[in-house]
Image (cartoon, rainbow, N blue to C red; front, side, top):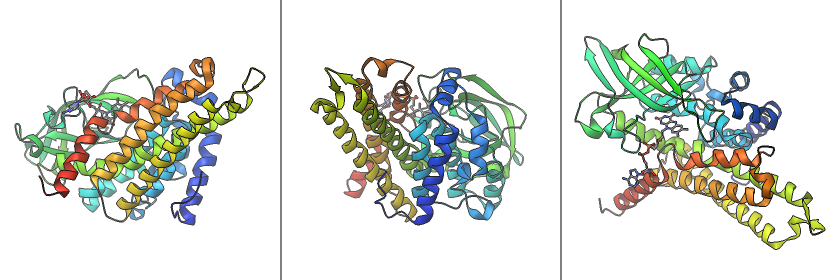
Length: 386
Ligand SMILES: Cc1cc2nc3c(=O)[nH]c(=O)nc-3n(C[C@H](O)[C@H](O)[C@H](O)COP(=O)(O)OP(=O)(O)OC[C@H]3O[C@@H](n4cnc5c(N)ncnc54)[C@H](O)[C@@H]3O)c2cc1C
């Protein structure tokens, strides 16, 4: 990959270390096996944790990497080059920690962060069966009883749901309160009343674990409330403004680059009519269009991540990066199948998995329709029209 975004030597070292690690530890044969079984390779999660990759954005003061979103983007991009589902597993730790980083006390940062720093996984539990885009329609409740909160409800589509040691959970504390009626809690996996629903049998990103998480009279002490009561919606939205560029924007770039490399290699050797298919301008133009989309997406992803690291968080830019990259990846993965012809449709070649994986970027961390709503809202605000 071209290194033209002013990365520091440390960032380039981490990028190259991640590249070596993931390409060696997660080869295509292993990806294929885990995809078939819909299984998260926990041995590789463990090794990634030992290298500090699963805690890269946590503060150094609690044992994390102390890195920002540019470095996080480099890591997730490299992992997604191999498999965007595995990048989702690792990225979910950063997603889950971000609310605590933004609004948590030092004690909460240490309490939550310890699970991750010790090599565990975390999960961000916001979505419910009837509350995806319409988050404020959540039905999970948290009721104060003495100095405890009692949580009841079912979260759906939770990444790392069945594997996490700790959850950040969004629950309604003021019924009917809409976006101001929700609060954010730290909930450890070993609390009585938590059970894991069936794992989703998904189209793609099958190396990531996605489940329901059920809370049945789960009690947490008052010091597990993150931020103030009623701030949950705000915390969740501010979290996405930070996590979208790395977790989706940059990760999709990794998968795009993987398609481009694989297409070049395949097209150079696949012979038709006595010459490699790469000799045809129609194939070259498809690859050129992939490169255009990839470079543009990457520029936007690193712009968004740099702005976050500079403390200049702009929800519209983060949403634009997420949308641009995920839309581009779907198109590129589809064209990659075209270049591979029948082989692209076969499970004998990696393109088929990348194609199935690609779709998720347009859906999670808010659908791309929701991103467009965020972008327009930001534009209207900036223009003083809202
Ligand atoms: C594999 C996977 C992993 C996930 N991981 C997590 C996780 O870790 N934590 C978590 O909390 N959630 C997670 N999710 C949930 C994900 O964020 C939601 O699926 C997503 O936000 C969409 O919500 P929904 O599925 O309810 O779709 P809906 O909200 O029902 O939307 C359906 C369609 O309608 C469109 N739509 C809805 N409202 C509008 C509108 N007002 N204007 C225009 N179009 C609209 C949507 O864009 C979409 O196309 C995950 C989902 C998947 C599939």
